[in-house]
Length: 330
Ligand SMILES: Nc1nc2c(ncn2[C@@H]2O[C@H](COP(=O)(O)OP(=O)(O)OP(=O)(O)O)[C@@H](O)[C@H]2O)c(=O)[nH]1
Ligand SMILES: [Mg+2]
Image (tube, rainbow, N blue to C red; front, side, top):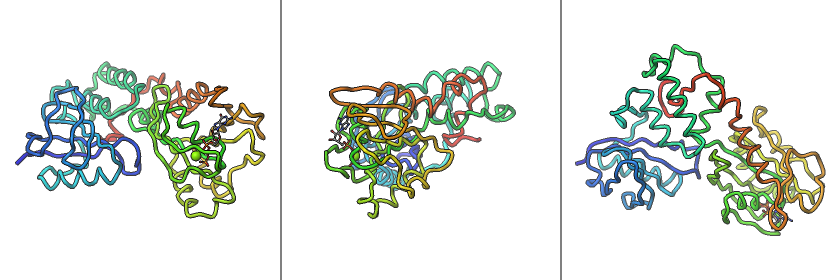
């Protein structure tokens, strides 16, 4: 029987984002998993439950990335436990990277393997270098230094923040998402109320990968449905809200129930959509249009990225405890 453990790296509330399970075991083949060489990505059947991508981290450690959401992660986790590979709540990165020159470097390697944002790489390497330049290699020693005021902001480079696009029906929310992803991930139609569920899609915004939630349009007609409650829950979880306001719509205000669900500290960008058809009824932060007369998309992308991870957080010299959001000591 194979020995080892596994850890679920995808927090359960992040349904819809890419799922990740870290697996450490001495004999993956005994589990029906063919090993993947270090630093290589390969497609693999995951215990007969899903077809996913596997990243080799070392001879005995791999990162399983199933397609499915929370349910499939639970199934894979249960199947591993049944085969004698229990789930672990905390990860010891020195077990994964025993050859690392210190505990902090091992956490840095783990963070690099977990993060999906290309712009995470340089800050992680830079902060790892800063810690070692201060002579700090173990976390216990690091706890003597002050906490960076940008800790939570920088953690967004490791765990994708949630961006929620909200607004009335038929204002172009789904079209905007599709144009950013470059393919059809959300339904678009002339009929108001096309989007029915809350799709969470990973979107790379100039190097920062966010989980983009495309909400169904809320208007008076739809406002009485059950989905209203779900919409309120989704808004409360957002790290950033895009309030989409259509050039062709005289009503720009969000329904008061939705408005009240937004936490006071959550930043809101007012996006003027379908700007090719006219002026917006209220002042907006950025005007965008897609289709035949595209415009404003590049501006919107940098605005979102800079709001979630501002340049001054990246430039600050205070050291970042990148291990804390991965389950390491705070
Ligand atoms: N002229 C113009 N039309 C657009 C633009 N973006 C989207 N549309 C059109 O507007 C209509 C509605 O677009 P959707 O993206 O489905 O709007 P939505 O806000 O997701 O709608 P719901 O899901 O119903 O809330 C479609 O016919 C789109 O083709 C744009 O920039 N300019
Ligand atoms: Mg839609």
